[in-house]
Amino acid sequence: MPGTIPERLVRMMGTDVDVDVTKRVLKRAGFMTRGIASDGGIVIPGGIEVKFYETNPQVFLRHGYTDAVAFPVVGRSLGLTQTPAGMESETQFADDPDGLGRQIAYLYGVNEDKEVYSRGWSFGWRTLEQEWWSLSKAQDYLGADYDEDLVPDWALERGEVWAAIRSLMNEYSVVPLGADRKALSRAYADKGVRLAGDLVAGMDLATATRQLGELKEQREADRMRLDKLESDILALRRDGASAVARGDTDALCTALEDMLSMVREQRGNRS
Image 1 (cartoon, rainbow, N blue to C red):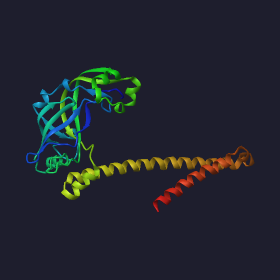
Image 2 (image 1 turned 90 degrees about the vertical axis):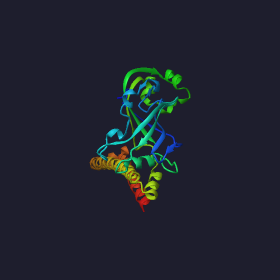
Image 3 (image 1 turned 180 degrees about the vertical axis):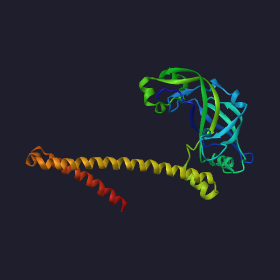
Image 4 (image 1 turned 45 degrees about the vertical axis):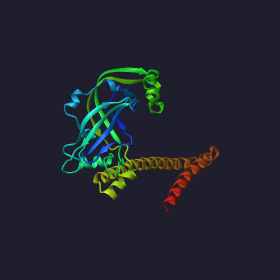
């Protein structure tokens, strides 16, 4: 529902990283920022309560919603730091038996070359106090960080965004967004990072699934259009010369020629 305050927001960290490869530590993981989210709102960094989280500072894989591992804890926070732009954490990835923590660390830049292959973090919280701000108030608060291109259409129409004034931090997670497919392919082919290969496969299969759906929709639309044209042919046969006088037969031929031209062009592109 437009305007509903979510419980998770995705952010992309930068590619300039400070790491300790031996200890598997990413020293500045920017997992949340104060900018307007695609959901149409702002989480106020100064209003985030972290005491509950700090008693058990786990870092999850996809918020735990994954079938990839039985226990989706892939690291821990060594300390949180509030910044002018949001919040950062010093993240230590797990040295787990199957190597998942080490693989994620590698992809997030904890490697000798400090090469970043994936940048996505997702911050989870529970809103304790909320307000609705006009866009002008949001712009005043964010200053140079205000980007109208990020404001969703519903918020522009309503002229307001939500603001989570006080919130309770639950966790933050690594998520497979903001990943560079070509870089991931290199990480798998050149470095043997199995997780990178799994992510590329997931990206490709997601793309294939989307394209298949589009093809099915197009095929169904074409079938319905052909059925309609066939029905028109039968109807116009009954009308005879009067159909010519109305221009219906010419319009029918034009429509069929357009479809045939499209099919011929697609065949030519495949050859």
